[in-house]
Length: 424
Image 1 (spheres, rainbow, N blue to C red):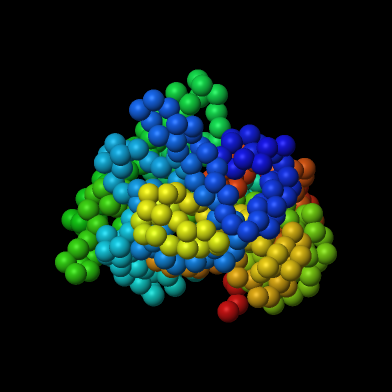
Image 2: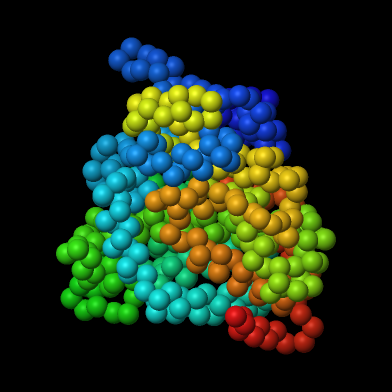
């Protein structure tokens, strides 16, 4: 067993072994440094300090003037030429640049758009389960969990139907190997494939954006490209970067949380029974606990830009820290019996959508609405819906990605009827 968080072999270990190592690290008096690349001629050593305690991750998240997102939050950081070609994603920006872009995007999410999107979520969830009952698929990710966030975001953005199959394929290519160790041949081949997928997706949405500037519609792309927030709307590169973030982050994280959620309910039938006993009472807590327990985004990177003491150590400008949300969400100091799956856990201050501050996930509310709507359909219409076997995990150090999950269910007795709309 390796305890080196910078070693790709660490992320190939069983999840339980990784969690034990995080628990050991949390018990130490200060953060531990991990070498990612030893010093070489013309290349300095590269490494990071691991922030693994809930309090440390939350404090660093709320101090962007000390722990900056630029030049990038992923490990490794995006190359300069990639940022120049594709534009800076919102998650990699700080200060005024980030605040202005987030303001433009936030203003586009009008109360009317959000209300329409919530109604659409319930309709899409019902249609997916209708299809599932009719077609009887055996693999959950492709048939169910990836469809909901993809269709909802495409509907919200106003993506024409003829583009959607290609977008789904591009999203999968762009995200399938993020943070995953690969052999030499794949390392030489896959990054180009992922970047090509992003480039094609961004060109596609840029074309839609140009059309919406000429002929605005009642959708998010129109709102973003015609917005006038302090005289600014999104340009083509900004729109492309935002769309890529929304598709890769919004689709991936939600699909993974849903898939892990089905596995958790299968492994904990007592919690499933409790949820079914009064869905409206327990659904919100169940969704929050699914996100905490699975932690779809494992970690984000930060660059120290001002001296600061945190967690027993003084950090200096130029150093790198990594915020391990997967560890913070199992911190014994915050979560009693942290490895238990308990849908009644309260309070549940998990960091599954970030640790607060300016980079808290914009899509957190919609993701939770999607999860609640889909599980209501899945648990009240089919009979004995369950995961079969363990999920096929990607072994990533970035996201808790599920490649596939076999599942089974029995159809309801009599003709399948769509569920009643969710009552609020």
